[in-house]
Length: 627
Image (cartoon, rainbow, N blue to C red; front, side):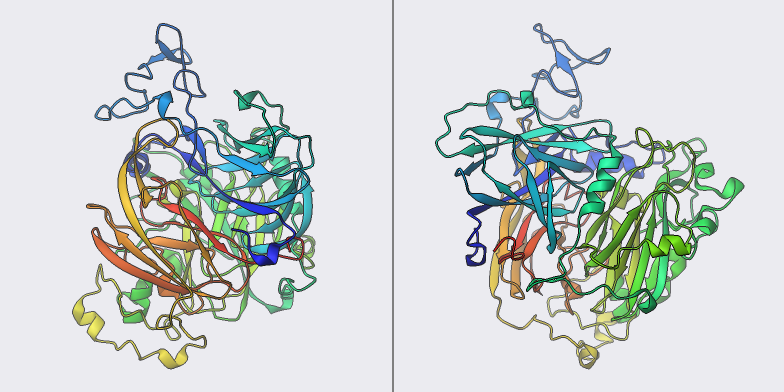
């Protein structure tokens, strides 16, 4: 619901948008980890607030004729009403148009302005959204205010949120909202409806609406759109000033590559986070010369600085706090120590994958927001000219940022760095802060690294600490939880009464969010889960009942800074153990001080792609432009 602080905005709509597959999460994830690599493929549909529409006989995947013969190109596939070709043999037939949920409808009044909170809850896709006949004004990204930016459509990648103002200034009628996937050639589209009060129009085929959106391969639009978003540095909602270059303690240079990994080795070439050119290497050491599967004996992985990341069997925080294999947390394994209050830069350098495509990635940093100093073409060398191009005046602040593709159809003419993004961050709370590609399949394939602030300043774990891995009773008893209490500069809210309290149930069952029956993992049997609404700076309590019989879960509060509550971040095997099956656990943390749009989602295995997630809204005015 709209708060009293947004009185001049007539209403708001929260729209989680996700990509959706018909195979189970286990099937999608399994092939990524096999040496005979099997890619999960593009999604079958897109869900807008949990609603999608799969045409059972004519869609982007296959077409069926009047006799029921279905063709994918020149290949015949199983009939849609028998068993769609993309379904495993044990699954019941499931594509039934009578179960289609219809389209999400946004009801508006002529002449009024509305706030649309757009959330990319997807596991892979870059989305573009446009509204027939209407322009949009960007006013927020990832919970932080922006200068108003008018546009006809908006891009937002996995994990990103973007809020826009829409004024109902057209003739009374019903208009089509279209979402399409971009940056990948397997384009999928979905529709919702913007319905004016008094409209009697019926839209039988929203796909027929003429809406101007960029082509899937138009990386120029993505580059310009990201670059045109500016942070708000004036008024009551002003962002904190950008620290000057002289404050930067280290500039991490992270080359992101796709390569084959040799068993027993987590790196290729000469690993480096100090020089992009050193990391790229020469001759046989170059990334593109490490793409041979060697007869399916090498896994396909993503590398950061030429290191691929493997999740530990004991949570990183527990390793640090209880000194359980703390020596493993080395740069050789993708762990980098930083200091609370200091300033750091990160250059995220894109590079063509093994197939030559320069992909668009979304990058999420846990525990803090950062200044986006710019998106740039080509390869970073650290020249004075490149550094002088950093935007230190009005960059947006985000917690999830893109690296943008380059080349025709996203294939650069030469193998070299193909675009880079620069961020500046200042950790304000001790902990272990995960940095990773937010595209779920890439996380599984190693596209991660870990920042940590060392062990000396860690806050004690909560009294309800879950144990796993090497966290034996003897190890836990060796250290009292109060030992480090005095080193924590920010009061932890664990023992305070919550301002907002929710209880959610994690359930599994078959659902048809897009007309097709599929096994899902949900919050209270809903996709998306209920919206959690909290006050700025308020203490949030979420009681989680994991009612799954054979699946552990962990929930990440995406974008929450977790000041001195790092144990509540919800990144499984980073900040804690997952919640075991048939177990009840309580998260408690303090919401960010600034109103904005956030989300929560599963953060272990494939539970996110199975449907586990929802919106998290910190209520209040984003800026004077929404007040």
